[in-house]
Length: 322
Image (cartoon, rainbow, N blue to C red; front, side):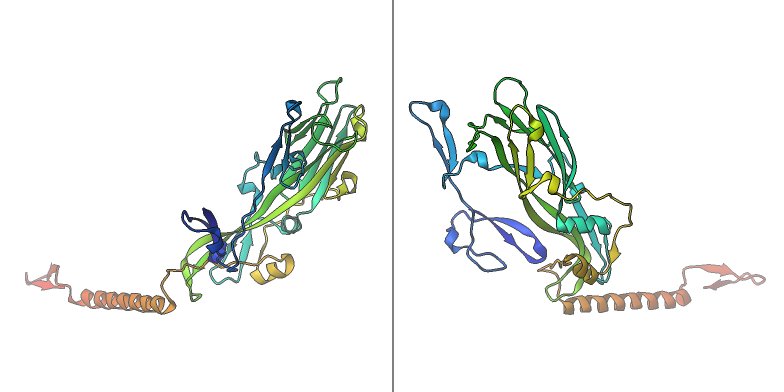
């Protein structure tokens, strides 16, 4: 069995437990019993009509009601969808890779409407999910005849079929799906020992914020897609706030306390469990300073007692040692 443990600083490690029962495992921080989400898939194939097979979950819901797409799209660079934050050694200043507008949108994760285009057999919508995730949802009919509708999300076909094939209750073609993703803040902080002493080494702690947006496309008239509607979290596309104009602003530089009050972002710590204690660190510093002082003193007296060179004195032909 594989379990995830979250250690100090938010570091997640995977640990293999080949001979341990799940009931004997606990979460590292909360000490609560480990819970692993589970579900079952049921495939029902009618004997008389095997082409009308149905795949559903354990509770009877059709799999066709649980489509999903990653957010941001996989084609987007992972680094471009993160905010990097560097924290000073004394933890009085942090510098982010974005400005106030981007960070505010990042924290809120607001879904904004961008553009929409409608034709008789094609309709598309573009939305902005947070500052880094742009998604295009499009429905189209590849052939005039027939009732097969194609749903394309971010340039890839997600669903293609008739209303009956995807389990629509009425005569209207409609489809539900989700955008699932996470917003990441990558903190670069100085490590500390178990007693809170600051080390000279830095490390990275990632603050991951998972989000899910429920989407819904419906086509009242399959002969005219201009009447189709697109919903996000229960709101129609026309009811979403319009995309805010992005302005050029400097990267945010402020204190961790100000970031917590303004955006609700807490600056984490990264604890090195096996780092030397404060007493050991102090002893090392004293030893280093003592060694430097000894080396400095030795060098001072050596300059006066150095007998490695001889200079011949002018006039008497004798040599004088320096």
